Image (cartoon, rainbow, N blue to C red; front, side, top):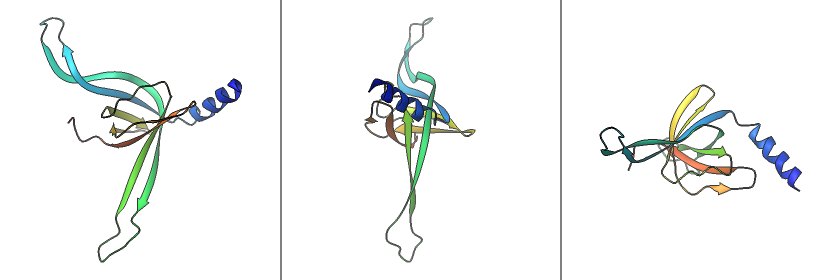
Length: 123
C-alpha cells in the first residue's frame, strides 16, 4: 500500500509545472533599530505546484452577454501549510500571478487542493 501511495504522489507531482511563494502579512522586527513594523513575510519559497483552471459559464442568458467566470485551483504537496488569506505568488508557463487562498484546503495523502482568487490586497 505504501508503494502505491508513493507512486501516486510521484505521478501527481510529475505534473507540477509551476513554483510558488507563500507570503503572510505580519510583524517584522528590525534587528538594528528593534522597531516592529507590519509587512510581508515569505513563509515558503520556490515550492513546486500546479494551477488548474475551470471556466464556468452562466446557465441563463439574458439580453446582456452571458457571464463567464474562472475558478483557479492550486495543487501542492500535502505537508505544506497554507493559511487562509495567505498571498500565493505562482509562476507557471512563464506567467507570474498573485492569488490569495480563499478557504480551507482539501488535503489528500498525495497532494492538497486549494481554491484561489486573485490577490486584491491585505485585509
